[in-house]
Amino acid sequence: MPGVTIEDRISGCFLAGAVGDAIGAHYEGNPPTAGFLVPPSLRVTDDTELTIATCESIVECGSVDPESVANSFLRWFRQRRIHGIGASTQKSLTELDAGGHWAMVGATGERSAGNGAAMRIAPLAFVLDPDRESDRQAIRDVCRITHRNDEAYIGALAILRSIRHVADGNSFDVNFLPVLIDSLPDSRVRDRLIDVRDSSPSLTEYARKFASSGYVVDSVPLSILAAMRSSDLMETIREIVQCGGDTDTIGSMFGHIFGAASGTGALPTEIVNQIDVVSLVRETAATFARTSIAMNNRLQPRHLR
Image 1 (spheres, one colour):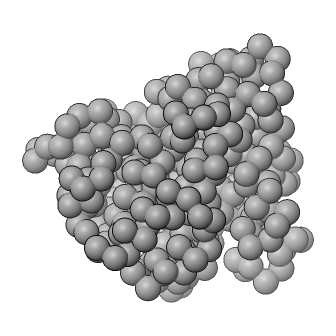
Image 2 (tube, rainbow, N blue to C red):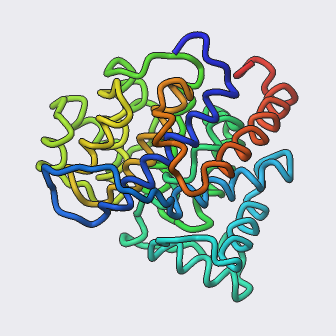
């Protein structure tokens, strides 16, 4: 959306992600349904909590340091501040707590291709350039803290590229999809995005044809499709909930893209204010925005000014 400041895009990104996470968490694991009500209590899960922990590390270091990010995750884990942890993330944090190295504790194998890296990647979109090799390595390293899996990394990369695209003020529509596909390595995530490009399904059609599970090949393309079709945050969250499955993470990833595109002005204030950690999200967004601007002025002076 033209005229929206980068500070407001960052705040919109994190707040809309928290809305999708908190509402989706109420319905997570349910089968597809026609019913939808905003739950009376909006409590975020690890999607939002690990996003905040990532921001705290970047603010503290003034850079993206995977060891620092891992230490931030571990601090939150030891303080019992992370809720709804998936199996891969649980494994990595448990092993970090036992003294494991951040680069070795992440889950491997086919069953590690979850969306736990993509759900927390949003902050990196504002400080790293995936077209730069060194930044791509940093993105991969941050992903591997919990998921040493190429599909998990490529799914996170797709979300990051989507957020960067809209944060630069560009339209997020079907015209971006071929560009995104061409920017990704050969993978199942990329193949699924090609299917989306070719068939242009509704969210319901996508979920029926594929799935809305926690598998990154299912969840990331559905989140991106939702963002491309959305003109209203709450209406799209309703559609995501009605698909069933991993509704909190899909809602959160969609929200990150939507909020970065639209800023806080497009968010329902009454619902945002019901989120249990709304003050922390706002404070984190403001502090992170200052750090992001300083990093970009120092390292990437032409980006996001």
